[in-house]
Structures are given as C-alpha cells and as structure tokens.
Length: 215
Image (cartoon, rainbow, N blue to C red):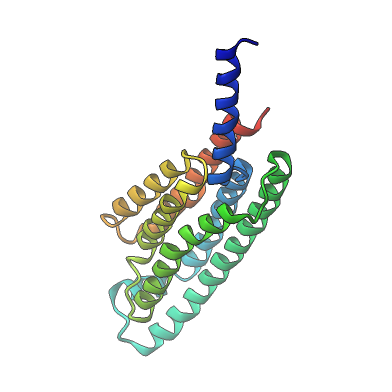
C-alpha cells in the first residue's frame, strides 16, 4: 500500500471512530417496525372502544358541562389510556431487545454517554408535551391531544437525531408535519395516529433495516 492509500485508510478509520463516539449507532430498524405494528394494533383496539362508546365521544366533542358525560368520558379516556400505556411499554421492550442485539453486533455500549444524551434529547420535548397534553385533558380540550402527541414526539425525535443516524431526522419532520395537518382535521386523530406512530414507524424501520442491518 502506497502512502496516499495508507493515509486515506487511516483517515477513514479516524472518521469511523469519531462517528462511533459521537453517534449512537445501535438503534435497530426492527424496533421501529415493531413499534409501528404495536401502534396499529392499539389503533384497532381504540377504534373498537370508541365505536362502543360513540355517544360519549359525541358528548365530549359538544360539551363537558354535564356531570354524567364527564364521568363517562373519564371512563372512556381511562380505557384509551390503558391501551396507550400498554402499547408504549410493548414498544419500549421491543426497542430494548433489538437495540441490545444490535449493540452486540456493532460493539457500541447500549448505555454509553452518547446514548444518554440521545435519551435526554428526546425526553425533554416528549415530557414537556406530555404535561401540556395532560393539562388539555384536565380542561376538557380533547381535540388537540392527537396532533399534540405527533408534534411533540416529532420534536423529540428531531432533537435526538443529532446523536444517532441522520435519517432519523426525517422521521421527526414527518411526525411534526402529520401533527400540523391533523390540526386542520380535529376529531380524526385516530387515523393520524395510525399513520404517524404506525405506518411511518414501519416504513422508517424497514428502510433503516434495509440500509444498515440486512448484511
């Protein structure tokens, strides 16, 4: 190997080491696919709950002044919250399993400095958004919950993308865009959730697996 080739090889190795130290590269596309599938299942279950309680949903859209509607609405909301919580836990478990598996392959620690920075970056917008959405629920403003979830989640993903693979930022942009569009179609949040948390995650995860993991 002559000097220019040796220098190029050394520069490539240095660049690769810097990339590994500054970005968390163990995120698995399969975790995104599983998260999307969980979201679609949750959407299907939620649609069933809403269909069975459509009268309560109609009352919530019109007014929350009637005490019986508030009690029934709280019950409906608790059912949907349970579905959302189980879905979130399942997505986290799958994400951990596939990320742990990929970390063994890439040799990157699953809980290194970069991983901690990435988690903090996504957690701040998501937690702030969660508190804001809980305030909306407390005050009976239900129409903005679905777009708010998409927008704040997208902001979190976008904020965390600087610590992982660059393609992750596109997922964040798409989630934010869907949330903004949903603002124009209040009351149709379930469909936008299915598209944002379901289909987008499946598409993103499949693409990332195809590009980085299939070999």
